[in-house]
Image (cartoon, rainbow, N blue to C red; front, side, top):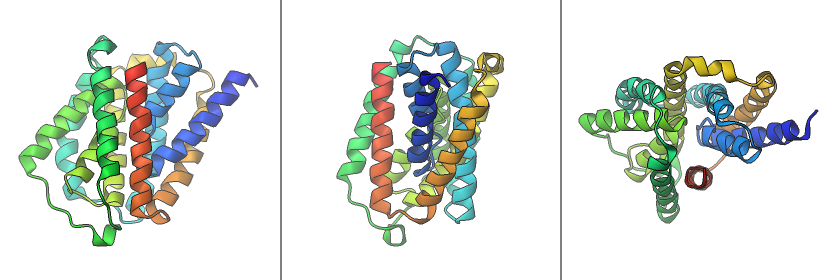
Amino acid sequence: MDQQILILVAGIFLMAILYSLVGHGGASGYIAIMALLGFAPIIIRPTALVLNIVVSLVAALTFMRARHFSWRLFWPFAATAIPCSYLGGSILLPPHLYRPLIGVLLLLAAFSLLRKKYQDDALTPTQNPPLAVSLILGGFLGLISGLSGVGGGIFLSPLLLLLNWGKAREVAGVSALFILCNSLAGLAGHLNATSNLPSFIPLIAGMALLGGTLGSFYGSSRLRTPIIIKALSLVLVIAGMKMMLS
């Protein structure tokens, strides 16, 4: 097997584990790996979305099965995010217009999460987000998700945690389904791009599935809240640096 493909397979497996620990699909991580290995942008975007769908699906099912999910928290964000993600997926903007800004915001979110003190989920007080605010923020996050090619949970998770709108594992479960829905909508927005998927997509999708299964299992049942927050912060740093340097 080609050395480039071996590195790609190993990288995707590790990224799938890390991202699924916090209910994420890993699109930003896959994009970073493929970009570093020299893959063409026309291949990177649909491939990352397909892998994102695979991992976020298994993560959503795992966290929901473990009862770490809230429909009350999920549906207002998803209701406006899904159509806006479809719209964003059909729009092509020059990356220099938004990637550096998104990168800075993700790094700031990571820093804010690390500074905040967190307790285990059972001891964490939360409050319900205002419905109107949830709908507006969902639309904005969905649009950014479609434009950037990531599932949106990378923005939703730190927002919910910093505003005390959900517990860590609950936020992970909500983010996983949010990412799945937005990734499907974003892929539908440029469905013709699937013709550019590489021939080895079954191999890397299988590795993403395996990594996502392992990561979401430990994230939903084994790791304590502070560790989950640190994992999320690392994910945000990777995504933020990728946005700023791409």
